[in-house]
Length: 251
Image (tube, rainbow, N blue to C red; front, side, top):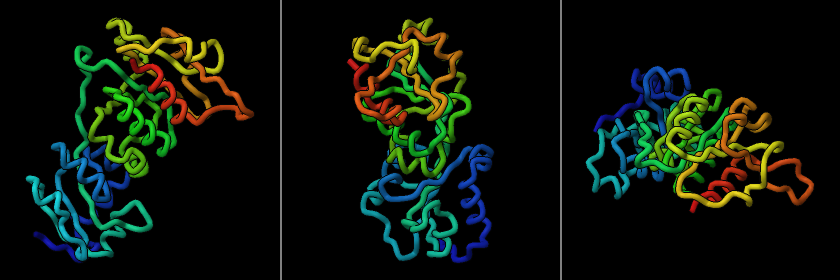
């Protein structure tokens, strides 16, 4: 087991760069932190290397897996490569998954149009996982799905649900050609979600926190839905709305 003590070590510098979207995109890698996330990641082939702070022991669950190389690091290095104020001292470098959609196998989809807030994105990925969604599609203009805040909010669901980045207009055309109902979310020109019956297959589109789903996308859906507001709030949080709709639409 290698032991790195200097924050100036070249490998430490490479790990730190993965906190930047630019370098995540350039390398096709990202960094995760915490035992739970890493345990979920180790169920896949995505983990490339593991880093463990010197005062931490290798978790028992890891001992029963064919794990990648483990590097011991100091507390100072943990602070350098962590995206949190209080590092957990357990890290992994993962490769981005190269996921594809198989319309013969995948039936339920969540599409994000311009959603920006990392907490919302992560929560929706986690909710989609819980609701049995087969694929999450990040539209152009949405936030980075590998942002550390997104990863923490998703709580390991990155490793359960395929996530791809694509043009939503193109995907809507593909879904329609395959007879997958496409539902948008809107406040105008929409019907209450309660008027739509649950189904075996669907694609749900949710939009930007302030602007909602792009109007050109809404014009091409099969039906646009809204969730009634019974109190005085102007709107629902997009992640909460997505959860309500995902569970309602699932048959």
